[in-house]
Length: 277
Image 1: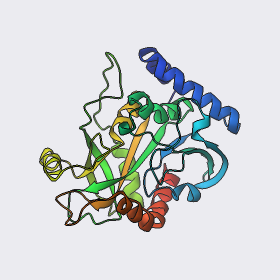
Image 2 (image 1 turned 60 degrees about the vertical axis):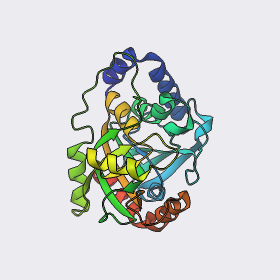
Image 3 (image 1 turned 30 degrees about the horizontal axis):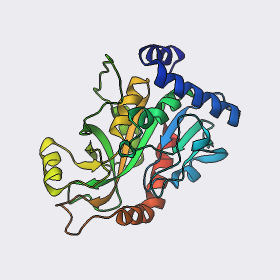
């Protein structure tokens, strides 16, 4: 994003943006990289992509940076990486997502994407592991997010902050993703607050409202990213069929296992997409 865009956003929400600026300054000092071009938030199953997009020049434990915390979820390494991509761009890889259910508030949830904007990024790729509401979405299926339902009852914005969310999940970026894999489907993602999995009735409610995917992240981050001036690409990995769709009970171990099994394939896919952004 441009400096003026970020300053305009900061004028509306000074404290969250001041915190993000402090984190971005700490990243620049630790890495010697004054501007990053693209940010990736890597959710369950997507971590191997960081090894494929280029050379990791710096790895920072997230809890050493202002506003970030040690990961609360198994499978998240809790690091921030600066990567020099094969195309000569700088990628900021955030493997330290704060989920809304951790109880740290929406500022903590949005801090990663705001830091990316403060670090100079113009594009953010938000990934997650999620439940599928369509039986044709087998475990291991990647789905491009075309829109979302924010069912958390919260917003990552504060005060009289009005942001247009039309085309929040960039159609331009989805077209780029499909130029890599034309079979990638679109889906509407519903974010629930968690940490419990949804009941079968809640899954049917989300399906009735138009959701194809359910999870516990991404929507609040995407809202904050749009406000900060970032272009957003969202990609979900279906790790399991949601409650009432799946014939077996859900477990976090199942999510981790599905992510590990699909990891090499979807990480190659993501690396090829990033190369074109």
